Length: 257
Image (cartoon, rainbow, N blue to C red; front, side, top):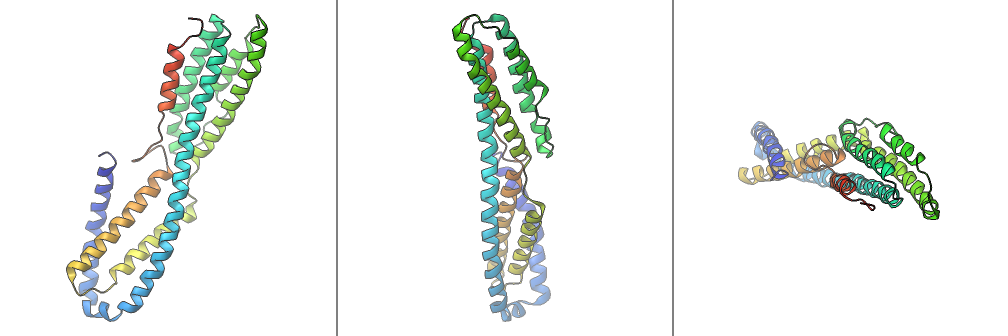
């Protein structure tokens, strides 16, 4: 329902604008005049409709891939944090465990809070203070036996993975549709709808149905594309459940407990 309601509101507002406008044009130009030019207008509708379909399909695929990419990177980042915790916890050093637990939880909270900047298209600093604090805790590790020595390279690799994924997630989260493509899609939508308004119909009811259907389709396309383009605000948002679950795992799981 949370998804349907905003779409319905936008569609109703669009219909309240386009239908009266279409009826005014039909009344002003005359239904007979529109019917006379139906062949030419119909050809134009076909051309614009084809172009619009290709542009809309391409744009939807792009923003959907971008949206899924951010979600996947969040899960990957959470996995890297979990790996760091598991490797550190394996060392059985209570003092280091407590320090690492604190900085990892702080990192997850800070990373989730970065969605405010990402929503505005602002890149968060990288490396962050919280990321550096993880490294500082790693630097305090002392090796008690051969097992510690074998685990440490894996811990370093997990940290490097976390740093790399974080950078990718920040970049993907601030990526947006290029302005020229956004403007072109908007202009194309207006042209297509305007051309449909000029399409002749004998029946006024059928004419209204045609305009309403096209308006809803264009409205939904814009809602889908513009909303998915920014995965942190709007109807569809990226899921941070992976961070929440990882934080819970770190707080509740201890190897040497």
